[in-house]
Amino acid sequence: MGWRQNRYNKKSAKKYGWEPHWFEATGFDDALAENIKDFQMRHDQEQDGLCGPVTYRLILSEREAVIDGIVEQSDLNENHIICGGQRVPVEWDKVQNLYDVGSLALPSDCYRSYKPGKRNIGMIITHFDVCLSAASCKRVLEKKGISSHFVIDNDGTICQMVDPQHSAWHAGRRVVNRASIGVDISNGYYTKYQSWYRRKGFGNRPVLEGVKVHGTTLKSCLGFYPVQIEAYKALVKALCSFYDIPLEMPMDEEGKVLRKVSKKVRGGKFKGIANHFHVTRGKIDTANLDWDKVLKELGD
Image 1 (tube, rainbow, N blue to C red):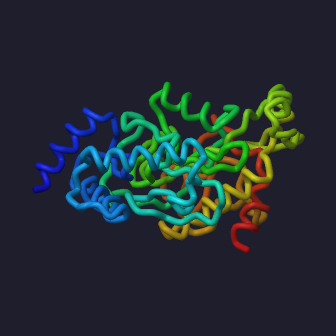
Image 2: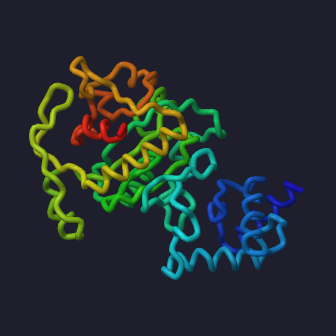
Image 3: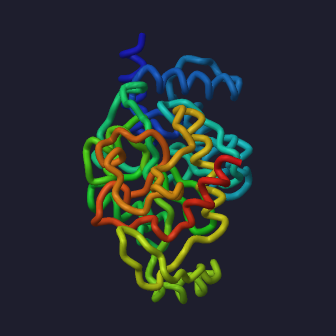
């Protein structure tokens, strides 16, 4: 029956204009049929796994209700991200996963696909995007044909772009990409963008002086909104719990977070949380965060 369901759903999608992610699936396969059955069960319909005209009208109405604000997205989906096709709860009030209306999901040609459980994930690599918003970050990544798994917007919304079961192209080294999850935090970085943030109603970002990385002192730069840091910690805690990643970072001889390249991170052998500057001297993101404070708060 599976192949018949898949064939029917492909024709239905072409006719009505729906996509598998409407049912929290990634393709026209058995998983999609099962998710359609779950949807039909919740709406007291015959559970045949086929998106026929009645099922299509129901899913379309549900999505339009969210877009129009009639129904809150949180009423339909508790705050969660998608990891290996599974729902992973995140203790944060603003989460947009791959299947939510208006998601920032990246196309499959921006990352390398893996089957669930086929990646040995041991690291989280943190970036800033040098973009003014999460939506802008997504556009830039898609245009370049690269990716990151998550981006945290100016208001603290955690936006998922890729399922961590897949290898995103975010760290510049294949061995690191294979072993890690990429998390971007939206930040224009340069102080010239401060007026843009004020004009858009986000308020001033902290302006940082004397930030050091790779043995050099950076020019004045923009820091992060407190709500972004809180969102980042909530996301990291959820990911570390699900993938059994230690809440640890590369440390220097003084017991502080290392602010230069780490051989273990660069070789993909580190287990814990790291930054893009730990991978290469050519990157400074996210040196403009107080990582010793963040690491302490993650452990509290």
